[in-house]
Image 1 (cartoon, rainbow, N blue to C red):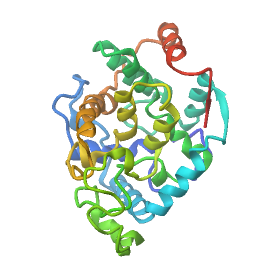
Image 2: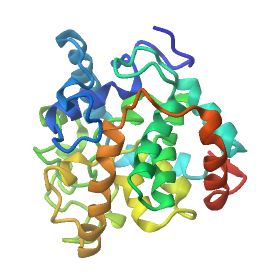
Image 3: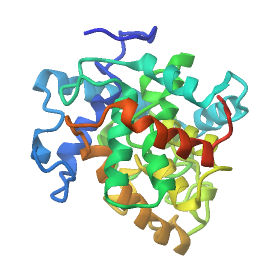
Image 4: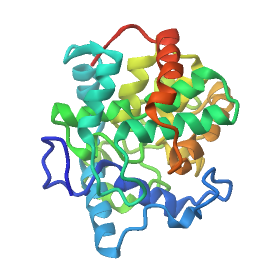
Length: 293
C-alpha cells in the first residue's frame, strides 16, 4: 500500500473509504448504476479487515459528542486554515491517494470524475454534476490532522438520544452524552420537527463541504452534500421527528444522489484531457477562483 499523506497509519481504517464497505453491505441497492458489477461485489474486504470498521465506529461513537461537534464547527467553519485556487484544492485532495481500494486504482480526482460523469451522462442539471465532483472535498480534514472518525463515517444527530438505527449503536455506551439528562432524551436540545438546519450532526466531511459550498450551489445540491452520509435517516427514517416538511421534500434529492456516489465506478472513464474543458467551465460557472479551507 502507498498512501500520499502524513495521516497517522495507526488508525482503524486502511483508507478513508473503507467504511463504505459496511454501508454497501447494509444497504445494497438493486438500482445500482454500475451494471457490469453486482452491488454485493463492491468493497469486498476480508472478515479481518471488517474488524477495522468496527473499531472505527467504536471511536466515532465514543468521541462524537455535542460539545465536540460545536468545537469543530467553531474551529473549521472560520475557514482560515488555507486558501488556494480551486484546481489546486483538487491537487490537495489527491494527497489522500491510496491504492488499497479494491474497486479502483484511480486517484481521488478520478473517483470524483467517475461520480460526476455518471450524473452528467444521465442528463441531470449541471449543478448536480458539480456536486458529484466536489462531494468528497471535505476529506481534506485529514490533511489538517483530523482523525478518521472525525472525517468519514455515517453521520447522526448529537444533542439528543442516539437512535438504535445508527450503525453499531452498542458503541454509544462509551459516549458521555448518554449520561446527560437533556442529550439522552428523544428531542434533546431540539424541538419536534424543528428542521435539520437547526440540528447538529456528527462532525465530518459532509458538514464541512456543505459550509464550504453553501453560497455557491442550489439548495438541492447542498442537501446532497450535507446529508449523503446520514444513512440512519435517508435509509432508516430514524429522525423523522426532527425533520420538517421541507427536509422531507429535499431528501428526494439526497436519495437521487447517493447511488452515484456508491456505485458509479467505471473503468472506461474518459481521459482527463477529454473532460478538462467541460469541468473547467463548470467550476468557473459556480465557484470562485479560490477556495478557503
